[in-house]
Length: 617
Image (cartoon, rainbow, N blue to C red; front, side, top):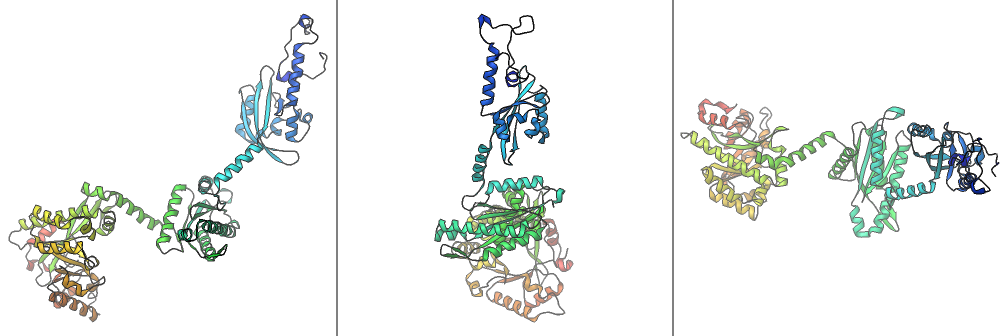
């Protein structure tokens, strides 16, 4: 055995350097104690046997990366005889040069500058099959060679792929689920480019079924699941028909419940997304036959299409969700395209809503006052208090920008109380500053929610006592719809305020369902005619006689009920003259003044009627 003619660098020598004792002649010394064979030769045979019998595929390569020897397991993986692998490049056999970073690490191991290297490669079997393998390279100490081990991980990878598929797909429809959708969306945004023919754009159709809950509630979840599966099938067909034939591909996913999404990568513009959305609506309008149940459903779709650059997955889906909400609000069974201006208004509304309550506490609101002028004598009889929000970001905001928000979230109670106190205090200051002039009243708008959510009667009584303003110098304005529908607590509150001496005015009278007979039973003292009546007087050359007849009838009715009438939106002297001839009591509008600061009102009070024609400022 000691006289074997095996080549230097064969497997046993490469894996385990020979252990010998020299006798001074350059030959190995005889075995000690008269042994029949050197121990290192026996070890080499043991290592060779283990190397060849190992199930783990292995090869020994030299510093140049050429195979010195390989075991049968490696030959089996690569579909060839192990002897045929000798002197071949291991990098070529195992595809190590396909990745620059991995190849550099492999060369570092060959050069002895790195202790270990590991990577995963997809290898090509000689019969054409592919397999996944984990390749590990480790230097063999003292031999100048490197041991490569190749572990077939195809089964493990296939199992991982199956588990990932289950994790990333909806069990009912078999469509990609929310996780996979966002993964694909994020990748598309990161990789979207104009290179290689891409458009650099991306689109989403985000939809849910209208009335799907009723299907589950009435027919059961089994039928509901069948419906979802049938819907998914139609969505996929639509995506195939309107997407894959074009440059962009589509991903159809079920995001949860009855919500689905169609992702369009490299979209060609809003027209493509709109056509896809319309095709989905058309497809879903066809009835579904589900195990004897014939169902008709519709869907609402939010459509977003934009440049991928600067877009995030979260931002894109927020826009899609908002647009879907618009489609629902606009009547369902339709698709709606994202509108940046509409969204900006919504975002502004949200921003105002979140800061409205603190703004009252920070004192960001101010009041301006618009005169209510006696049409006969031209004297300022009163003023209407109009609140303004001096917003630190959006500037000065008129009431129509935030009052409805305040009514929705309940902050109108706090804001209304502040407006009432400030207006009453100001009216009292004008009275004190001009003792020789008849005091003017102040008119304050009141929301119905203030009556329901607070003790308005107690608030008014307390503020009047606090400011010293007489009750008859305060007028509270409520809209026609609010007053006409008053019953129970609101009606009791209005009656108590009227008994206190406070005047109650119906604002924008004539725009709602006016129940004229109801006026006699309400504690109302003033009607404010809506500006639409007065605008009919504006064109004096082509006046509409019907407008004047209606206004005259309303004024006469009000006077017979003991009410005074104020005309809003008076803009010309001709309008004022006709209203005065009809018998209207007071006018309000730009002819006299816009809403102005308390100082400008004080100046008007100080000027005598004959010195202030029109009171225009």
